[in-house]
Length: 115
Length: 114
Image (cartoon, chains in turn brown, orange):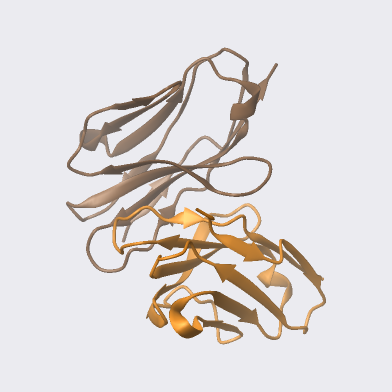
């Protein structure tokens, strides 16, 4: 069975601060995919990134960066110079390559960025 | 290209009534998924269609839930009769391929059963 843990329920920062959202996962598969989704106040789930288990390179997209470490089963997400528009619930999710392709989600981390 | 759409956006019904949720996937996406988030809990998988066939319905809570995808296009999820614990946000997602491919989500349907 697989599991995703987002230990931080809620994080509050002031604009321009950097913030890291933690994600730890468990799976027995050697091939799997990790995702981050953003859920702004409007409610939809917005895809941010997909990473396969064989690609441990860190990724940077603008102010967003992701650190994937198989040794610690973590896939952390950092927002640099946070902005009010970053306020949202962020979900980390896992899907195995074998069998069914259902996403296993963490409970989400609510990020509140104050001006 | 239009994204995944869901209808209605909100539904408030009384216990015992029936509600039908609809999902239109991204055009050309054979894979369609239903998920649900009950207040304060994780987003949980309900079922997965490949075209019109149910690939995996292991997440369906009980037989009060019925999902269909006739013709392999849009899907409906019917709850009959609705119970209080069915309240939550129902998300639909679609992907072009199967395992490992990015699933694109709709805005969700917020269901409140009173």
